Every structure is written in C-alpha cells, then in structure tokens.
Image 1: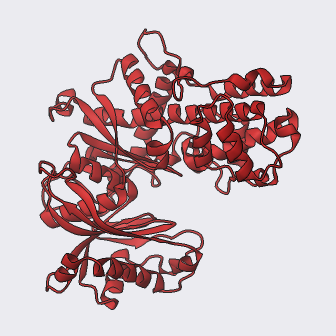
Image 2: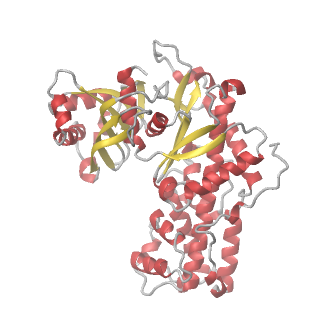
Image 3: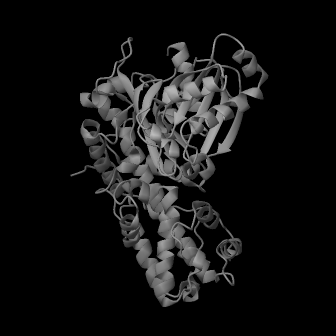
Length: 506
C-alpha cells in the first residue's frame, strides 16, 4: 500500500492553456459526439488525481529499482563517472549524429563563474540532413561523409584551422544516437544503426576507430576523446551550468533520461569486466532508457491499446507510446477515426490524408491547443489546408478535436511528471542517507530538459513543474524540491563538455 499524506488531492484536470479551455462550441455537439467526448475524457483522466499520480510514481520507482539490479536493456551505466566542475575551459569540436541529422559544432567553455553571458555556447555549427541518400552510402562512405562535413565546418573557422595546422590534434567529442557497446570513454563497438543504414555492415567495429580513420583520410588533425549518448550529454550540459543538476530528461519524438547515481545502486554485473578510472570514483551516469518502463503501471484506453497492438514493436516502449510527441498525434487521430465513423465528426467523412497512420503531427496539436479564438477559426483554416478538407470543419468539430487534443496532452504531462518524480526519488533512495544527500548544501534538484515537446509544446514544462510541486506537497518522503530547467542543444553542448572533461581530467 502506498502511503500519501492526508492533504486533499487537487484536481489535475483543471489544468488550462491560456487560463481556460474554452468550450464555446460544445453546445453544438450532436448527442453522439457529446457522449463519445465525455467517455474519452473520462478514460484519459484515469490516474490523473494527484494522489493517484503519486501512487503511480511510487510504482514506477519500484520498477526502476528492480531494473537497476537485473535488466540488460535499461539502467545502463555509462563510462562517465563524474559531473563537470564547471571550471572546464577551452574550445572543442563536438558532433551530434542522430537518425535524421548530423550537426558539427565548435563549442566554447569559459567556466561556470565567468563573466560571460553564456559560459557554455556554440560558436559555430553546421547542420546536415541524414536523408535516404546518406543512409544508402555503402561501406566506409558514411563515415567519410561525416569527416567531410567536419572539415567543411572547420574550414570556415580561422582559429580552428590554425589549430589544425599545429602538431597537437583538435580534441573532439561525439554524441552518438545509435546503440553501441561502449568499452571506454572514447571507444565502443557498433551494435546497429537501424533500418535504412547500409553502413550497418560495420556492426561490431569500434566507432572510435571508424571516426578517427575517416578524419585521417580527410587530412583532419582531430583526436576523438569522448563518446556519449543523448541522455548523458543532456546531464553534462546542464550540470556544467548548474551544480544542482543530477538528472536530465529528453522529451520530443521519443523519451529518455540520464541520472547520476551511486555505483552501489547498480548490480555489479551491470559493469561487466570494464576497467575503472585510476582515481577513486563513487558515482556513474546511467542511461535509463526510460521509454521501456511502465507496461503494467499506466492506465490505457482502447485507442492506446490499438496503437500498441498495431505498432511494429508492440509493448517495447510503453511509456513512450503514451507520452512522447511521436505518438500523441496518433492517439488523437485514432479517436477522430472512431468519432467520424460512429458520431458524425466531420459529417462522417474522414479526409483521406487523416486515414494514414501517424499523419497528425505534434506541431498541429500544439497550434490547435494554443488557439484562443472562441471560434477557433485559425485552427479551422490550418486543419482544412493541412488535410485537404473540401470545406472548413464546423466549430463543433474543431472544439471536439481540441478537447481531445487537450485530454491527450494533459495525460502526457501527468504521466511524464509522475515518471520524472519517480526518477528524482532514486537520488534519495540510492544514497539511503539523508545527511549524505544534503551534504552538497543545495536545497533542490535541477533537472535538465531538452526536446521539442518539453521545451516548445504550449505550457508543457510549466504545467509539469506545477504537478511536481503538487506531488512533493503530499509526499511525506520528499526532501528536496525538483526544478525543471531548459537544456536546449544538449547533445552538441554535452558532447563538448564531455571532451573538455576528458582533456582536463575532471
């Protein structure tokens, strides 16, 4: 039984965008639409009272603790053991290699206590799409392309080019989005690259060697000093600026989190036969693979169940399917499909463009939810143009759609907040000693936040902060306030911080 305080729970469903969620069009719903809307709202509201969210958070915490001891798929220790001191300085080459984008940057670090307005910043960056033409590159050509883009960026920066002429190579860090079996801070064997990448024939080859050799073929005087994943990069980038940072979350198309835990929190088997740093260390950055959690913790609806059953990887990432931007639009679309077929939405005619799975994107959801016009006329125009409707949707149609969007995004905020609260609680549990946990002298835990949903969806981060404060208010075990902080560009900046740490021995 989960213990919560006796304070009266506050209704999460009263959360609003721009003050209130206007429902002017509701009087024009037909009875079938009204019945379905009320049913859908009731289903999406499951678990959304504060006491229910706290119980959900406690259950997730138990699952986290179990996976710290047993799983080979999540709660994976990195080769980053310390957090930055904030004193690291210099200019470093940083790469972010993702599924659809390559970013090459020079990152400047001036020190947390410097007088610079931005002590951690991107000095120069180029962004290149990784489209099907690039995915089709055979053999070493993909890595040669990365090296060519790196040279292109460096050639535009005189200081970097001057450095490249020196005997000492330019230190580089890379944020690598694909699975690797990391063997050290600067090496790791490629596990796979995903669908469409023909360079996946290099599975089992060392990423550090492949990148370094490609740079040598391009006559670049570069040394790869660090490899990090997205969650570690997010923690490092925010911790450089804020010493209270112990945790970072990424919420965009998908979801993940990194957390700095005591090594004793993880089962010894998690570390395999790796060699540890020569200097004593007690903590390690952990890649949680947060998307994999929550299969038996979250309440779902029939639309969620349909999405999961028809997914190419059913049950694989249950938290992601309910929370992340890659799926919010599909859940709304599935409700619309049913409403069109059974309740007269859009006069019973589903536009062909909306018959395609995943055709309703998060940007469209955000625009409609943020629409404050009583008539929702901007949303009607957007919807008509984007999905080729022969005429604009009626006000009743648009209000129905907006109410469903709000229901889905509200649930996403609530479930996300419960998961983040559970992760932050690990920082208390892992120490098992409140005195040790408070010895840093800080009265809060900062959580770096990156990703399009957490940073750009209207009101998302603000409402999550309010939810976290409410959860802390009724939790008798809470010690420190949890504070969400934006950590934009975390992959590139985190790669820069990681290589700076490797070079300065921090």
